[in-house]
Length: 434
Image 1 (cartoon, rainbow, N blue to C red):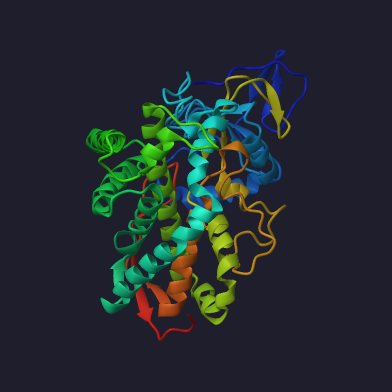
Image 2 (cartoon, helix red, strand yellow; image 1 turned 60 degrees about the horizontal axis):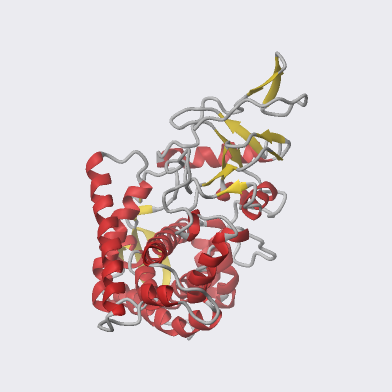
């Protein structure tokens, strides 16, 4: 997909008039924002920080991917999120999954469907995250996190945090929410991990993509089988059954819609939370003063959760396609142009956040957009907060410090910033509070 030239008589930071036509100029011609190399992450943060004030929206010319508009400021990112009529999600959610035509799952899966059809799917999915439901699950999630971290302490404290903790908590929480059999959770964790690694590794080789496709197909088959079993009355009251049946407040979904959205919840909710937890714990190992302050001020855990969502959020970019010609951040965007928002940059916008690069456990106000905004805001915010809160609360209760225990391994990705390995040493301490 390539952007089309558009007529205008107004120059902007990245557009210049040329022969009566508009020639787009890339302000960072030697930098590829779609580069998945994790070694470039710090450089990209610095580059985008320098562009936020003068080029909140700019044309990023074709490099390893076709050209796209990059949105790096807070205000314009919120505008894209909230205006689904102009910025469509139906063509795919990432630069690597964008299609010239609507995604095959558009109209069936909530994340690649726009209003008004999006509202029907969102009601069906959102009911699982009602405040009462999440509140009922919190004690079980909290107890599971404490069990995992206690096991870490009793085992000597040195672990790969990804394998021992971060990969397990979101799948367990999703299993509770979705009504999945506990005996199946390890199998689901394995399959979502395979899909997760493929999503992280942009440009993954054929063998890895084939393995991920196979895992994705197995998960689809799994949810379809659960639905068939539930319809026969021979299975638990699982999410696919509840999605298909609907309720007094929401319509039921057909079989394809129920299976696709169950899969989306199982993968989407687990992969992003897993990556966020690894980013958070790495930050705590590299900034020991933050962990020390939390131990001294455990009542700061709730605000620290919000700061974790802002500071440690793993989503590098989300993609939209302009459904019509529009202006954004002073730029004229043509219908059909790809538009990528960069939430990590928006959540560090100096015009909104004081000292944005500082992890401040008492930050207030904190109007982060770590869960997006508008129609496509994350429906699982409550459950994600429960998991982050439990990790922070029990970590400062059970341990006096977190230390690096080896080099971290960041995944190759232009979509999610997350870790494949994170060796951490948890230093045991007597409980500080209950």
